Image (tube, rainbow, N blue to C red):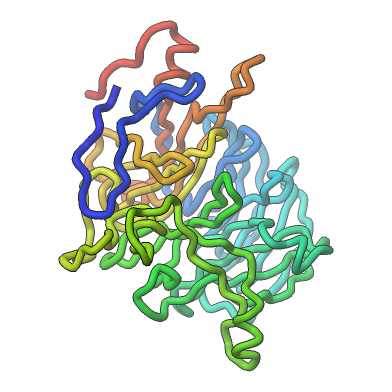
Length: 369
């Protein structure tokens, strides 16, 4: 088991504890797949959905075999699924277009051209707040647009109609409500939206209530960015007002700390350019810590649990997907496999959890080379 590691300022550290049938042993590299054209991936319904430089959306098995494919997309660069894993969304940079497909067979569902969006690096679908503000829509879609310095929010309707619903956050200011370089996103177990800030002076993952704040529109009806979300705490710190560290994963200013200076860190629970997020069936948060060539895991309440990496010093994970296994009769989900896509060497790494390896082989996995 991993021992608790020393914490830097503002880092939430606790001794790892097993939950259900999931142990705290690290993941180990299981298989390496070469796919130099892959740009981004997401895991859903026991499959991988990958967009590639050849203009394809590819549905792959857990052994990375091609299951279905759509070609002819205009420079696809980002991909996500909805909360039910019924639809897979793709951003086509060559057409400034968002397109949707059925996850079952990749049949097209609809598309929309978004002229107000400059550049998209990551997509996410989240329904939090939908029933109150867009009850006939299927989901909210969030588009990380670092060139505009915002995360856009749109309502997606059946057939591909989309309606702008303001923004989640923008790059203005130094508070946790600001995200300077938005990247990967994730809905946590409580319905909040986590957003990576890949600004190398911050290196945070900030937690937001994504429900549009209507007072923003009332206060500034002509403004370009109404309806922002609110940063919300993981857990209260022992001071008031709450410090930045209460709202973020990573190294942030803690209670009464006047010496904090942001920047990349390789300490446990801290990041160098966090880029992508995923979660398992128990709500654990997996962070692709790109600049540190590793993946870090936090509990659903933001407590650091463990770190794992490939033996290669340049694994450079820029996308991440977690595949759960449910224990029969036990009702326990745990992340059996973690897939990462390398931005450095065009490889997809499949990591296997200690628990799943034991269930398949009745012996512990071999130690890293």
